[in-house]
Length: 413
Image 1 (cartoon, one colour):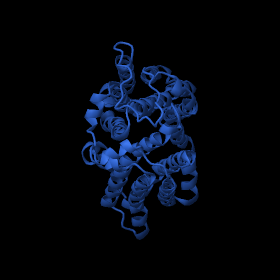
Image 2 (image 1 turned 30 degrees about the vertical axis):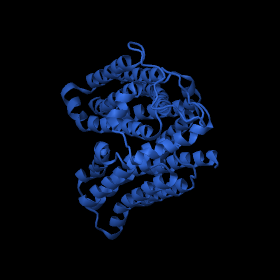
Image 3 (image 1 turned 90 degrees about the horizontal axis):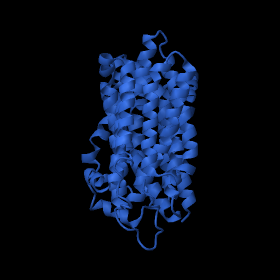
Image 4 (image 1 turned 120 degrees about the horizontal axis):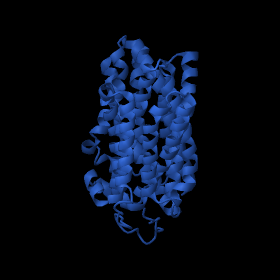
């Protein structure tokens, strides 16, 4: 078995699938508007995508435990391709409507809900036999592959839309995900034998959090961070409109954040295995919260906005790498898959809820005060959930590793 080849295939899959998803984020609203003539339909796919994630604690519990091989994950991506083809095929025959948009969102949302945590869990399982810290490093490189598409996809999408229109980008996304499925078919390694327990003994997500206090603290920080994310995106957009610079503030902030997070993702593979995981994650959220709170004071300068946002972005890959390290060193088998799933559910679900109600919050409190309060909330949860006030138990694991596998890193925060 060539573990390096399997790891390379999984990292490449992450890159090509996310490149496709980020490019079509530009194209999909344009196609929806052109085909239906109604502005409200442009957000229908995005709204439908979130429903499977928010309800996954009930319907996905047993399914996620069966995703223990590259072949099974390739099957999930194949289903995602079918969902992605609904809109371009419908547009080709002139029948795109709200039902098509909702169906595409539900199918792709269900597939991504399973494939994201499943790929992270399988990548960690493949790395278990390669030595201590390898899983954390490879998950950090996977995050880098994901974040690099933040920089590459928007200009690529803008150029493609200008040259050939938005519809071809939807075909390209389906082709990219299909390529990802083919790459996963080449993965010959499988999850550790303990992971096979999942088919018959899938743990409830709440039980995993109760059993692993450090993971629970990390997931709590991720949830609060996701819930307050709207203050950054919507807050800067509204501040720009209020100050006569519509689009400029949020563009500067997102550009700085993207550049900072890419730089952080580049150094995360080397730093994450060497840093205390819970403390690293808490410090990241504290730093991001501080940048949120500082942004209203620097809105007079676009370069300063970009620099402040870049500082917050720099910390995030280290925090994400830290929670991945906690999960890979504290859990294995069925619990590992559940832990990755609950982290994704809490964070992504909180982002959706925050964006849903964020406009109303900003309308009542104002964009500047909302940014300050959101930043203070992240600082507070980082202080309370970090290892400083109440040190977490040391060395907690779901189970001892089998004797023929190397002992993984047990360094507690």
